[in-house]
Length: 600
Image 1 (cartoon, rainbow, N blue to C red):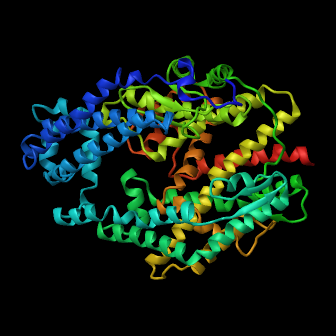
Image 2: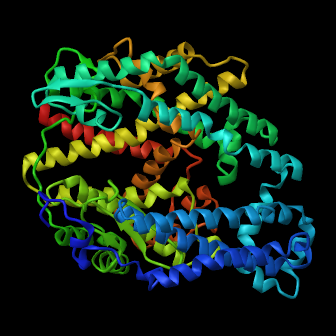
Image 3: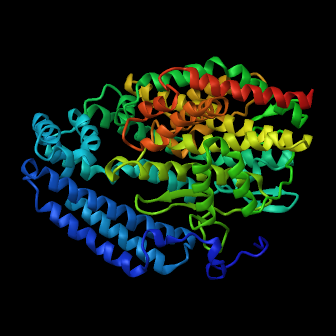
């Protein structure tokens, strides 16, 4: 692949593309399936008001509708992702959205009507009735739906909630439009010329070798947020107030309880994460002291923290070689795992390289009936792309095992679990690469990027999670949020987490106003718990035997058949205890210690 010239989609070799035929053999098959969405929705709607006497039929229709919607939606989305300039793909995605929305509106009564059936009657029919065995593919899904029953409102109240759904997106939508479209960040003078500063280019400026460039970009970037701080703080306050309104309206004690309840995650998981990380902040401070030394600066500034500890080392790994490396690196999981993954990576799962119009980045996405597809923009001279392939391969194998070991209604796992299998693979790859190089510069580089990744996922996301908790608890306690209040909370967290080596600017606490994840409250903690579970499990499997490996496969195969904490407990980690987080911090500490030896 010639990376100097970006090819058109039509110029990409077929063997470098994913094979969407596992979803639909032809475009005509997709068109036929799309039309069937409305057919199944209408059949289900015809049963409205009669679910108690036709529950099994209703569940079968709903399952078929959801399965069709998933497959047709994923197919259209993947077509668009491979070339966002493809008008036909955009047309398909648009028509899918219209058809799926119409079908969803037609059957919006489905779950409330099931929840209205007396639980005793459902239990009798599904456990001891003449068709009990036929209910098995739906039994766990039913139990999860019924668990939410106490927080479901009357039909009229639920309708009001539904009517508010679009307006509820206003804070998030306005924040995105303001920060990504309307705000002008200007330009920054660099040795390469005057370059535009934006949300997208910000990260590139923060790793620029010229410290003056970093400082100027930093100050200009946050001056734009300073000019709009009251507006953005009002948008965030509106989002927090909506979280609290929805929690109180549905009878939850707090907005945190409402966010954790669907996954059956105890609040102790959230609070233990924060308290455990806080108890070990000195090791994070050691990292920043090391960064200060590596950069050779008298004062470590906030615009320095994204700089790598060491200069980039050139690794050249072709795609085929990358797959071979993954086969070896992931061998602790056994030949079945590596044969399926590597066969898929070379046999139709992956869209490998960049082409014009292709979505940037990487992801794993699939449906119950097709391949667990992977989008890559693989570059053979970027070592992080090898880690990305391992990461997305972990997602895809999690999905593969979940789909092959569960009925459709029970196969989908939660976001809480999603980052475990992917980060697990990254850790095994890191250990393999470190073990198989005797070059000092390569070892140091691997140690540094791994420490940096764990820092970003464990420590930084925990700091974000603590900010969210403090802002929501403040409003729940009767203290309204303002720009000054948000900044004061965040300034305190910055000082605690970054430690004594860091010198902050007056503008540094404006960072709290630029994080889009804050508009999806109590989400970011899952990154931190995910990497904690993954690192703990990777250590458990590599140091254990068949029992530990089989425990991990129980997790991969469980899909949505259990709640996430229960699933991870099967694998051998208990997220209601502090040990997984402590293990992750210990691994980070070991990385810092190994890296320190190179700067002594």
